[in-house]
Length: 452
Image 1: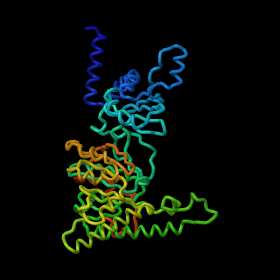
Image 2: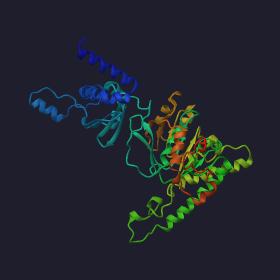
Image 3: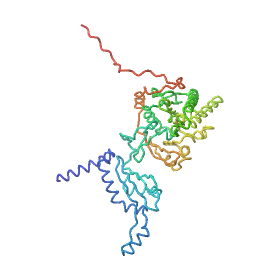
Image 4: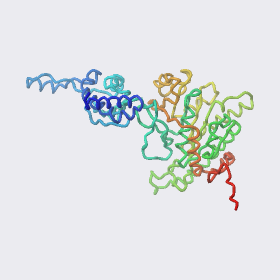
């Protein structure tokens, strides 16, 4: 064997090993080049086979007839731009007259087979312009968040990776309240840890309600302004939050400054319109298991339950302008939890569903906003913990997966930013009691003093 042959075999073996062990590295070294060539060479034939071409217009047929030339062929959408990413390719198309963005979305699975890609999704950017995102490998199998994300913004944190390779953000100013469903061992806790770790560096007050005796949230107590580990304390905490919300509204009303001389853009309607020196700190309320707040076994517990749900509904309906945001988790969230539950669920715009045990649970999350996402949620296999379906009231949905974050990693993030924990007077009675962090590592053994 000659040296060029040996070198070629080594390159082929290295490419095969990378594709098996490190698909991301294979994509950046070999896969992206092959994919670009494959798309450009096959583009016209693939578009015709997928029914994404339009017949020639009348004036082109007339010119061909006058010039005695062959009839022009059907035309495919025009490529505006093609560029690679660290997970795949992005193809931007200009649709021809008579084509619709739904046609491209309906043909996405056929495009995936024809171009030899792992996944294909499409979205309409504006009228007549469609963006097709293609992934070269399974980005959700081993989630690696990009080193650089978008410019940081208040109340917006990256929490997961989408199946098209883009970052999934939890933006509380755009989607104030969220609901996370999932069965046991489905990945809810990991998703919640990523959320807390992402919020820890920001100027925000974290409030936790963990009725499982605090096993999920109390290890992160150094970054929490208030915590409750039983329904009785949760009721008092929620009613204190309602009182805090009313105080914030009084502050906004006092600072609205409505007069003829004040521009419309400067009239305050929520905390983000207030000057920074007067703006109250926003509050994110994390409820680990909502069913523990809604279940009751006696008349006294039923009265407590009604007061808890009433407080949650008030916070969901009125809390956005006061900077109070809800993040509610649970295994089920149906009407069997009692009156007021469906009213609360209607206020939770952001929906995330991990693996569920039955179709009814998936319907609780997406049945009223994105029926297509219900089928995707019940198809999540049990062995792929962390896979989830994220949707909102617009009807769109994405398959996401949060990077695996251990409890120790989340605790370290909270301890690192413990000095950013705000103290709210209304929540002072619920501030968790934690020991101060040691300033230096204490040696395990003492060195005997030297003797002369």
